[in-house]
Image 1 (cartoon, helix red, strand yellow):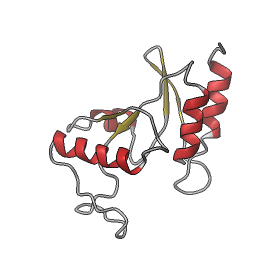
Image 2 (cartoon, rainbow, N blue to C red):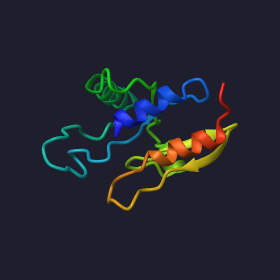
Image 3 (cartoon, rainbow, N blue to C red):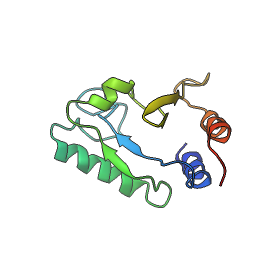
Image 4 (cartoon, one colour):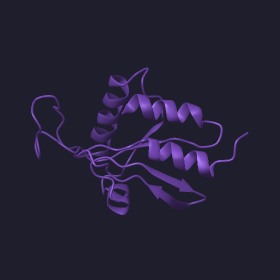
Length: 125
């Protein structure tokens, strides 16, 4: 998924800004563990969440270059946008214009929907 998103951001970098919002852990070991692949616990402080985001950036170095910001500890972004566990949005002029929905494959997104929207709605330079 990330390589497709990175390709998308490169293709539209002159027309759109791409940002990753790091939210609460979807499968924290102390809440809803999913095997041994993930070993993070749910952040209790903004510093812990920032550290987890840094680990994500380091793990994806070279394959994901978007700026990453963290949701606050009150989880306002997660709650407002229904962002758990992963969602993709397009906000234009301060208005939510598009929210990608899960595809027919469980737990999967079709990032081609994002490309289609961007192609139709972003002016070419």
